[in-house]
Length: 319
Image (cartoon, rainbow, N blue to C red; front, side, top):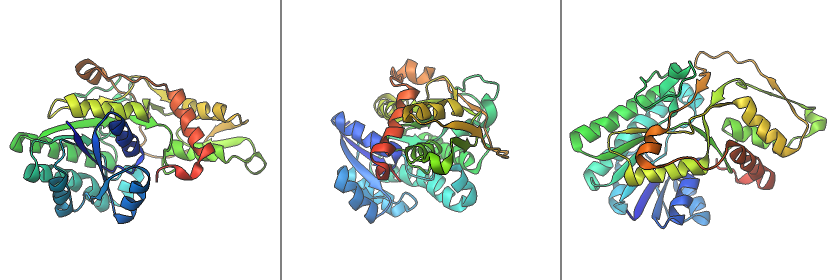
């Protein structure tokens, strides 16, 4: 497997994944949303093509021109609140996009191995008893975003069954690390701590969801897991990408506070949401047992590197 095409390559995980794959000797072609992003990407990272995943013709042409040995499809709406606010746009960027990518492979290069990025949120509250979620756990999506990912997974199964495509589904749990956008919760916290002005803020930082527990990984471990799935993932199977343990949001934020050296007290900000998931903890025994992957970096390392990326170069976090 030599040439890999990555959609959503300019995003947080996409940037780390393309870097990791190039370091491992692959030829990587990045798919980005528009020409402006293509020019920006190529100034820093390498070859890119415009690939609007909601445009079937564009996707098919790109896949036909690249003829990749493997595809990692990361592009699409990644914020649950955005999907709830604009469900049609989210449908096009998630469900339609999965169909477009898979149909492009079917038409242009059907032997391509494809890894599609789903989400741990498809499990919903199935793990609220604290037990780790495994791939056979019944899916209980609570949000528009998670429901659309479930629909997209169904499309992937259809393309495997009816067209014999080599498609594998990744269900990543949460991850952080250097360069995470401040559009995401932990990126926003890192930015706020990096710019902290005690005179203006006092010493109290109010945040929502501090009691929620999340299975958290370093983004570079996630990138390595995607490479394993490209190389050895079993078609028509889903794989959890997770650490197997959950820690509270408060604990993760406190890691960044300690790394910042600032005197900051955390305070709960009340949130009323029927889509809130108290606990998301995964079982990674399938990925570990079948493919030999396991995380090698700590959550503390990820949190410290995230904060450092804002303290040193706050304007470079991936948008």
